[in-house]
Length: 85
Image 1 (cartoon, rainbow, N blue to C red):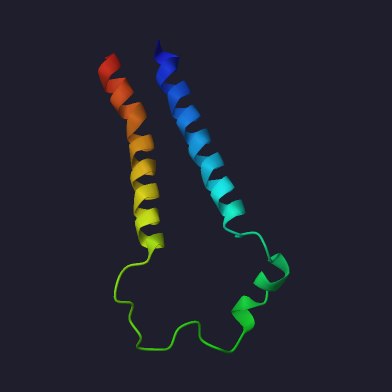
Image 2 (image 1 turned 90 degrees about the vertical axis):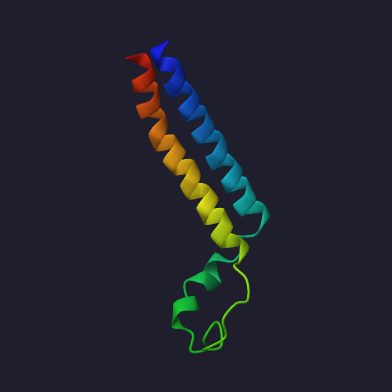
């Protein structure tokens, strides 16, 4: 019974990592690897200075969701330990 929580944790982690890898493949994150190594060397700025975004991009919310999932994953063994005492 002790191992059930760890198996669930590993299963959920594996599913999330495979889903994020599939999303990266579909969205073209790995499409142009030859150009990516020269991006830090270009002279042009990526955004004009002083231009603030009016709303937060979707990446901020995705990062917050991933951070919450990581925190939940790290807390799961503690909760399982506490319930098993």
